[in-house]
Length: 310
Image (tube, rainbow, N blue to C red; front, side):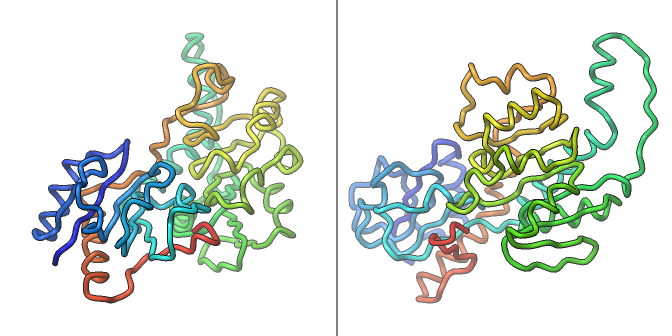
């Protein structure tokens, strides 16, 4: 195999990815974007949130590999021609996501924020645990990560309802689809888990009107993209108590500015976009396999439709 793979990410470790990729494909030339001197030799790009006009530099590009499951940073770009774009589909990423959401759901299901407050006051206060089946968890988005998460929550005994834009069917999960069913789905979610991709149809989807349809005191967990939720509306609902608590791993602007109101809200738990990340040791085999397929003039696997955004 000949050709160069160009790497761009301000988050990932280039040397680690280079070592692992060349272990899988010894003949592959792996370079950082800033060091490429012969752009016409670049046939593959492994990227996470590349800057504007990044793809114009590589006239013979045949494959773009997104370093993650969400491809919103590649949607609507004028510099990206009609070539295959793939996302990572790593079982370890799905397992990591399901584990994070399960932690967040259990934290609310077992009233852990209440006990954290009691500990600060050195106050011994008992609350009887609720049965898992009495707690309604709504998973909003039933893609690969959402399905794995919904299945894990159902396995733990929670009453799980799923919502997606198109029809889905899952054992142990009551599935709803389409905008006509969204309000009913939200009204039955004691804990809402947001797992939708960021697309023109989903940005701002959870506005003040839709947040108001959640049960009073509901908890919200967002592990997808920050722009799906109207942040000022969420702040207002958290302040009023209509939404009792939120676990937020994603935000409209990242890093979250120091002055953002979320930092000071006692009913908000913040993590820095780490619910599920690409693990090089396991994801590299999928990437190498797709490079080999393109080199052999075969279509790559796990392609995304940038017109849909996923």
